[in-house]
Amino acid sequence: MTGSPPPRARAPRSRARTLAPLGIAAWLVLEIWLLTLVADAAGGLGVLALLVGAGVLGAAVVKRAGRRAFRTLTETLQQQQPGAAPASPGGQDRSSTGNGFLMLGGLLLMLPGLISDVAGLLLLVPAVRTAAGRYAERSLERRMREAVAGHGSLGDVFQHAVVAGRTGHLVRWRVTTGQGPGGYVQSLVFPSSLGSESPVIVRFALTAGPGAPPPSTMDEITRGIRPIGSSTGGGVGSSIGP
Image 1 (cartoon, helix red, strand yellow):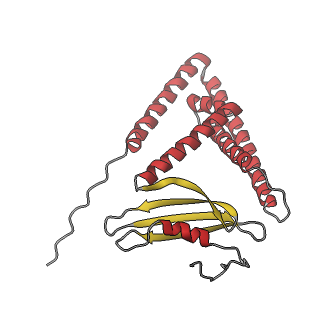
Image 2 (spheres, helix red, strand yellow):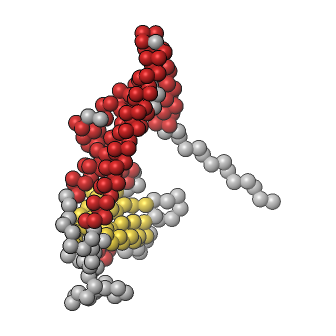
């Protein structure tokens, strides 16, 4: 006779999941109340004209943002062709972030409501989009660092690395599990030394159990990567050990 497994403890409900439905309900009630006030002052036709005009403006903004996104994608693909001059990565990131908030502003304008229209109009201002983009980047970076730190961080999470003479980036973190010793995981990305310098991604992991190699072994592996045809060894299928 086998017994049933013990019931699994429910994870605590996050604060955001608890407050999000309340916030949405409050926003809907406030939108309806404001529309009622405007309808009393300007009439039903005035409210209808306001909502239709905001929807048309929002559709135009979304269309413009979509064209900018397509143009940015086309330019990025052209720059990856051999012989093309590299563009500034920071400028592309800022353009993509600003274009994303521009599209968000258009979507807010298309929603029926006065609060969403005001928020959408604010996002049409370049200075507001820039400030919102910086805040979003800082918030995302902080949350990612906190999430990785909760699993045991190895110093700085995002690090620069020189791989086969090329500047790359790596992310390393400690993984803990309910059973077993866990381990260390690293993702490494660097530009290829051949062709159009396409990114090369290397992922590997080490166990953290007794007798396992230390995390510094990941640094030795990274330093041991060599370009194909290098006189110091390395290449496809070659050993990187001493």
